[in-house]
Length: 355
Image 1 (cartoon, one colour):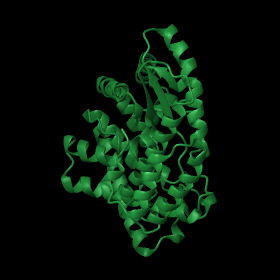
Image 2: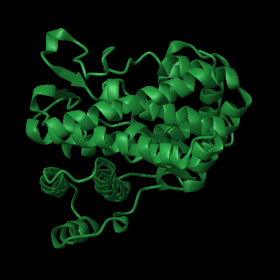
Image 3: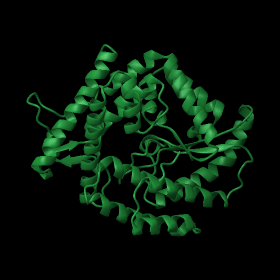
């Protein structure tokens, strides 16, 4: 379910952009409006607002734009008269998008049997591919791994999604663990939300019944080392990249992966990382102050990533590396503390899963 823009104290420009989004009636005008929204959001991020707030605000605008594109694209296609739902996955599903986000989406629909599913898929695919194309024109890069609703592999009936999830959890190959980091952060964006919620319930039930899968997810999560040396100083992970540290792979991902595991093991339906920490933390015995500290650390890492993306400009392709030399003394000190919180989260996983 999309995170509402109403959760953010609006300014005049934000209200104007929201109004124009709601009134958007021509698909060809969407890319220009998307660029204006991006400029507005980059301006806000340049003011060093909270990373948690900014990623939610970016995601809220992206969700609203995506929904409007879907609504307009539906009118151009022969849509089957069955229940269906557009799924947001990965960072979009968690409402944690930054300025450099590719598409991760899927589609679920109702079908009574395999033959009907095959026939319905042929009707849904041209629509889904059109939406993917329109989103790419608005700056949402096509997923290099093909995780998009326009790919037949991810335009599936409820039963087909169920079989996929069962296969991943029951036979956890490396690819299945990678898929879990994307597809288990699933949110219903448009259509029949009940179908998305049904898949969320299935994910929770499967992981609750298969603790061995969560154990392997924890092993996988610990593969990303916290970039602190033995003195507790932040270090670049790759000397070939100068003094840059990848604050996605070795920063925010650590919080995201840990929160996902803690939430799934606790039966928490939340998908957003902060919400997962706040809801699952007490269940696993974390103290309130510790939860607040971890959430603040995660927000700080996101803020630094966004600031670097603003500095790199709209043409940036990755937006994950942050140059340590560009951080002031205070930000570097806070980053050290934030990464210590990330290390504590990993240590909690090690203890919980005896790793």
